[in-house]
Image 1 (tube, helix red, strand yellow):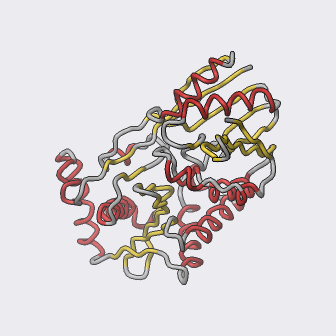
Image 2: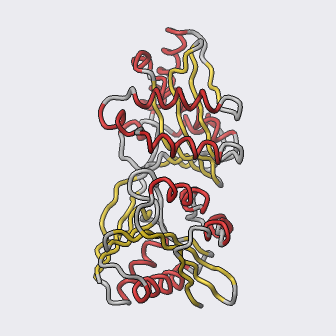
Length: 325
């Protein structure tokens, strides 16, 4: 078993590791070479480092990193990539983590590694922590927020029944209030033909948000969102949905459908409709669609926000490993 390291960005394509993402139970859309390549092209500023653990000519593990100003991090940054870390064949986590970190220690110059966005229930967290300790590194496990998520039952009715009565009634009340004030509404999903104007409207809604959220969608972030849409709409990974009242798109949401999970990535709503909670009604409908399409999990991703728990989500702890030589 050995590790092959490269700073050549063409390896996103030539050493494509989507098969490992698919096989690894912890693999998400954020671990795919397609997503990480796009992130690197838009936001990468240090030295790219792609690592492949090979056993008898077969790649059994892969990880993507960046080195900047003496700091080693997972590729993906800290603000738009909700899950990070290596992927590999199930059962190889300990061996892959040890080989991976050994190569990073002996062949790469860095002073501190800040490895974020590792789910507490992922075997990679303990594997990397143990491997780092065995290599004599100082290891500090820290909290890195929470990613609330919903384990989906077979039907939307069962989902509603699983909620506490207060939450269940709140969801029904918001939908009835919306219908009572504006009449019928509809949920639409972007297609290649509507994608450009739909993205324009979503970005407009996002920028109208108060506080830091409204300032988030700067020019570089807009390009990133548009590229995600263009690259992953047709493969049915990227989803852009709206709640429409008449001709008005009053709320929009971006999500990723990957494997058995639908992940809610971002959302925004028209402040003129704010008293009617169109965003909550839209997300409840996305939960319904996820159940009907056979998804098993609705992931509300990082951010310990109160509205996520009003939809019945349970917190999933996210951890961070800080390693010092």
